[in-house]
Amino acid sequence: MNYLKISIYALLFAVVLAGCKHHEEARRPISRASGTFMKKSADRNKKLVASEEDVIKKIIKSNPKVKYYATKKGYWFSYDEKSTTETATPHKGDIAYFNLEIKDIEGKVIYSEADLGPQTYYVDKQDIMMGLRDGIKYMKKNETVTFLFPSHMAYGYHGDNKKIGPNQSLICTVTLRNFVPDPQSAAAATPTTATSQTTKPAAVKPAVTKPAAQTKKDTLNP
Image (tube, rainbow, N blue to C red; front, side, top):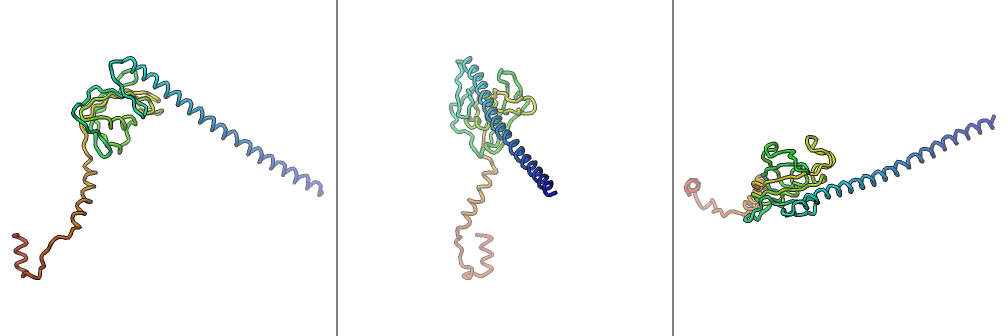
């Protein structure tokens, strides 16, 4: 009888041990698969970026009369209208007013200026296309600039869920009509200045040297 119990316990222990080993071994391929997937994904992204940049470089090469400027962010731009008098550019805390036209990389209009209407952008405080967020800060008032954006500087892998598809490079033409300081930022700074001024003690004549009636008369008619 004891021999039977020992056999049963030994069998149960073997089953539990085998189950633990099976569970541990089943988890390892997930980690390896995850690492492999990430590497493949990174490789695909590199190839996609390289492919899009090749297309853009061909466009630039096919227009030798147009001067294109490369940026550190990985996009290019050229001037349609360049200001020779303005020197200031938008920076954080400004409100930029501009017109925008968006084309696909082959030059077909996706959104015209009329479609989009006048644009208002709170510089570095509003979520807009990454390329425009950076590119507008290169511009001066009344300039028109054409940007060549690879998809990672445009709407990325998800598009805009309307007319712009996934991983789509774009040509964006921007006219910066004006930019001004954000009045709310200016208003927020004003109380600090006023407070610092009001903390200075004011010169007040001792009230005890004058009768009460005379003090009232002087207050109304200094």
